[in-house]
Length: 274
Image (tube, rainbow, N blue to C red; front, side, top):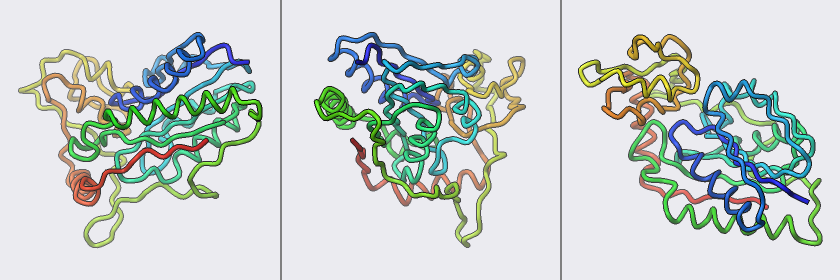
């Protein structure tokens, strides 16, 4: 018997948050259950130990980075204590492909003691772009998310429901290596150390980027100083109210434009697994 539903997510630009909360809130509302939202994008929240209970259902969402669960989140995910809670892994990708991110997230939650009984891959506006997956998740995506919530309710309230049966999702085993962008000659592009720049003529030092950065990598005294690791979530770029943050690395821009050229003209649709 489920007594509580949690919407738990990492969401640099808000797309994962939108989908996870919609699914989780719908389930909680329709079953008249308590609802809790937990945003572990916030650095301080990742210092809070999350211990679940068997009477909880967790809709758990992360963005796809290079076809996988963001590797900088793995240390935090390893601290989860599932205790038999039901789980719905959800991944958001930027209209290219979710590759092995969903099966990887499913396996992580299972290994941490949760029981994944459904899963979904949804599309969000790509963090690098305003063209690729523009405006998504949109109204159609949210309709699909509503239907997904209803199907989850039917499953967990059905007389034949087996909470220990692991949901089958798309992906390969063993999980493939991270997606590797390449230049026009087929050479690998490495943008791991690329960081955003700041146009100080536009920056008003409001501190929004410092607040947004999920890794705490921006100097509070100087927003142009990204002293720490950048995971390319682009929260600071898309969240800056004055448009002062940007990337100018040649390889980053090549990869961005290549993705837009190849995938912006095709609409990917959510894929659901129950």
